[in-house]
Length: 182
Image (tube, rainbow, N blue to C red):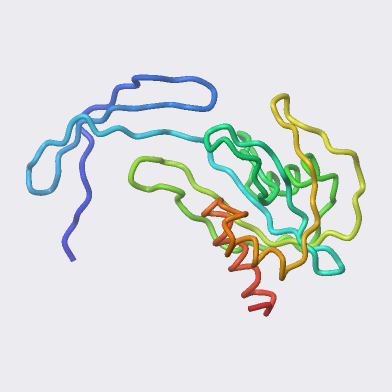
């Protein structure tokens, strides 16, 4: 197989803050063509968890997403902090956002949300939750409602474009496959 990898000649940061970093790379392709600038958006890795209750409901979160101008239904999860494993972040994020303590955490897979321009990974998990053990503990800019949704309703919500986060939809189907629900 041919090596298709580009070699980075130079990188310059054109914007940098806590959540968003934009880098302009100069690259050379294997055929010698120069590509510049090639913009790479650096984002933190994150995790999401398909949380299933004892009565087979999904613990989901409802929150406003300004980029799409909608209140969305999503899986709990968030950014993986420095010196934290994806598994540790998954447990922490579910507890913070929902108040549920999870058990039987199982990795479904990880993916690159947009490999053309983003450099981060999303880690997707499946877990069980029996009861809510704590109050929600939001980050400063979070305002989240917890919703429990039946497995049948979740599939209908996906079909009706009521659940729109593509990476998370893949995780839901992977979890349902793992659980024998499809």
